[in-house]
Structure formats: structure tokens, C-alpha cells
Amino acid sequence: MPCWPVMVATLTISSPSRMLRPKRLWNSIPHSRTRTQFWVSTKVNTTGNLSGCEAEFRKAFELDPSDATAHQRFSEMLSFIGGRAQEAIDEANRARQLDPLSPIIGNAQAGAYASVRQSDKAIEIAKRAIADNPTFGRLHGSLAGSYLGEHKYPQAIEEWKIDAQLEGDKNYAEFAAAADTGFRSGGWPSALRKGIEVSLAQLIRSRSYMPI
Image (cartoon, rainbow, N blue to C red; front, side, top):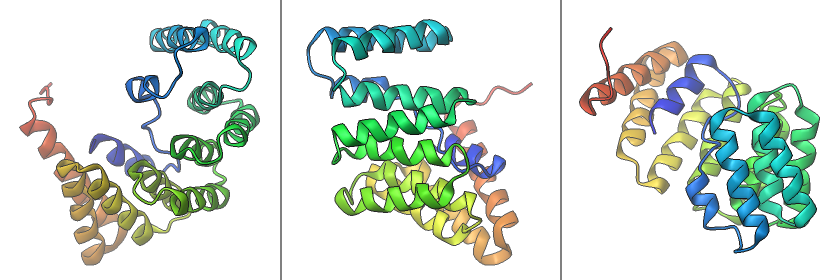
């Protein structure tokens, strides 16, 4: 978990990088041919065959054009690969129309706007989704990323802290606390440095660190 805030902070981008979580999404998809098609699409996506992945999404839409989750995931894929921003936004908006109360879909909709630096719109969407789903941590993480895009660093750090608490992620909470301490002592550069230091220490402790 701490790796993604470091990447967001280091690059100062507005969209979070926790887009692809197929296991969680799998449980929300109904047992149907659409679900099977969606599973195939996700598998193709992990291989990097984007054209094949898109074809599978198109098949899923033919089978069930009202499958909000499929539109959501297609939007996330388009946001991820870049260059098709309006399509990503359209797919996210379509998913939201089909399932207006889903926190995951609200998160994807905010992410679609954030991916093209429309941070003000992303913030508006994330806040509205949080009002409906205040305990859904990832929405707070998305809001943090959009605040970064607006250079609203205290607000971003606060949303990181809320996200970490809601998700019960101790490493993420440690990162957010370090960023908060750093910001209070030396502004954003210090927050960035402290956050990266903590995350690197976590990687070493977890034995994920491979010295070169």
C-alpha cells in the first residue's frame, strides 16, 4: 500500500494508481456470461494485450449493455493507457448512471477526470461519493490524489490519513503520519522526503527490497 502514495507524491500526479483490483471486482459481478466475458477481459488485460482486452469488453457490452461494472473497468483501462480521455470519462459517467450509489464506480469516475488533470471536477465527484459512502477508504485516497493535482497538500495528507485508517493499513498510516510531520516542519518537499524514507524502510522490512 505505501508504494502508491510515494508514486503519486513523487510524480505529483492527480490520479491514484490502485486501479486494478480484479478480486474485489470479481465478487461484485453477477454470475452470467457477462461475468465470464469480464473475467476473460481482465485476464487479457494482465498480459498487456490492450486491443484484445478492448475486444472482450465490447463483447461484454453486447451481452449486457447495462453492466455498470464492465463500463467502470473499461473506463479504468482507458484512463490507465492514456490518450483516450473522453472515452474514459464517458464510460465512467455511463457506469455511474447505471449504478449511481456504487463507491467503486464513483471512485472510477473521479479517477477518469483526475487522469486528465481535471482535478476540480474529480474533487467534486469524490466528495459527492464520500457523502454517500463515508467509510469507503479508496474514495479518500482518490480525493487525496486530486488535491495533489491542485497543490492542496494539507488536504491531500489528511485524506491519506483517513484512507489508511478506514482500510486498516498500518504501513499506509505510517506513511501518512510521516508526510504530515514532514509538512509541518518543512512544507511539501519535507513531506515528500519523509514519506519516501518511511516507505523505503517498509520495503526493506518486508524483504521486498532488492539491492542492486
